[in-house]
Image (cartoon, one colour):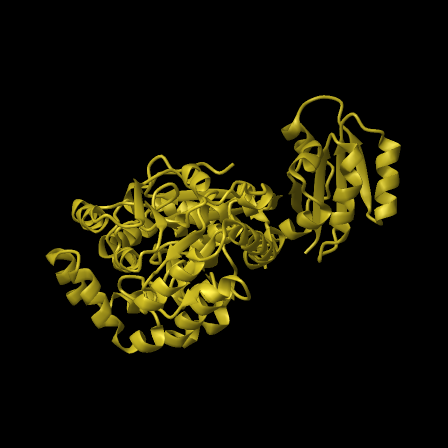
Length: 348
Length: 169
């Protein structure tokens, strides 16, 4: 059901509008008729109103909004936790002046979110690391937190993926030219691999601006062994087809990703994730062979080293690793367990 | 508090599930009124006896759901009325089991017009989210996949700021 008062994306406007919505008669009627209120994004001003009507409120966090203005935490949080506000302002100032001024004036906004969240009955976090970071900053939420992994798409669980790795080492990156997703690590990797004479192919999906495309073009114009295929924003099903032939997913994120779908999908489709050990990633990429391909967040040379190492494998080795990864992921993301845990929270 | 429960039913094959669910409730019902249509009355009485419930079985020969409720209501001793608004033909289709019916016992909706009438139906889950799949990223996709899970247990209403959001399957 479309609600125009929820259409604003900026937190301040959204929260003002959500408060207006919560006080409207038609919404209060809806609240009265409901048994459970579920908030999976930022509409927290609803919480105290729902509690006034004696309703059960479940908040599902997919980010760090109760502790960070930008809803992200740079990795590792042990090093960034104490300077989170400064990090947030720096990240917003990378965008434009408006965002910069917004962050500089409203950096205490998460305090408000925390206040609302204390009224919720249950808070679902999507990985252990996610819950640990939230409770490190907001210990009063500890007793309310439940950890439930996000369910993967049914099709990925049911259908055995076709694996046909290319002869040449092929790597996939899906996060566009986002700074926090590690686009500059990808550029660094292209440059270093070319210098070292490694033959490899990179498939880049996601949104890329003109400047980013120019940077990529400048790197591949030199005659070297690196091929780059920029696919842009493509549908999920096209991406799944591409994943059949790639060797590994590159995930050099700079933030404490709570439970990145890109990595979950890569495990289920048998692509080795060469990822920074951030957020929920080490939790799901545990044990051999994939754990070996995690690297210390922020270490660009280690990232290149892992790519180089995987490029020395044969396509058959990669296919065998892929089968093991899928088996591991199927155990971890057992849909029955996820359903049971979720229904327990909703109906208890 | 004394509670009477009215069970309108056309699906006698599934009546034993409902009766055993009623038996498993945390409160004891003062009386159970079974309004059955196209069923063997004797069989229904046997099922009640087996479930250890004190039942009044009424055969409905005409009319539909509302008529069955009124018929049941007429025959109660006018305590708090509890209606099982579940068609037992649908029961098997929706995959609801006696256990989930027990869970739904929590949902007693007081009807404003009839202060002594409550309706026992699926709980309502109100989802409030400014963005919904396909807008957004992993969080929105996760929300969409998550909401496909409790559809059997809840009536789900999604209130969102996304136009043309993906519908639940």
